[in-house]
Length: 96
Image 1 (tube, one colour):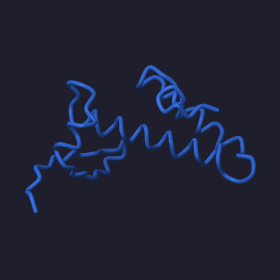
Image 2 (tube, helix red, strand yellow):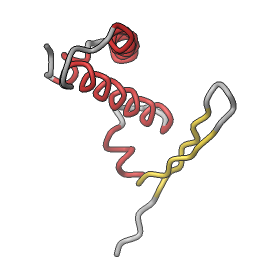
Image 3 (cartoon, helix red, strand yellow):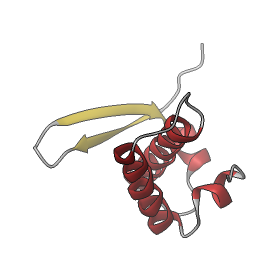
Image 4 (cartoon, one colour):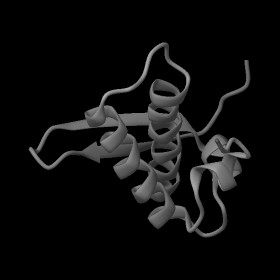
């Protein structure tokens, strides 16, 4: 097996909890949109993942989502648009 160079990104929350994520360097480079730091790349992917997950929970789950879940989705999508300068639907081609 070929040796793969890795990069580790440390994640820290407001309460001081930490975790580390180690990924193949070339994967981070593939996702990099040009001149981003490793932390920015990982944060972008995390934002996309969270937005996708909340969208699925609200739009594709059985039953109607409650007001709290709709508010969580709205806040997430607002943060997504602030970060990427486009809506989740524009970014993913999945708009409804």
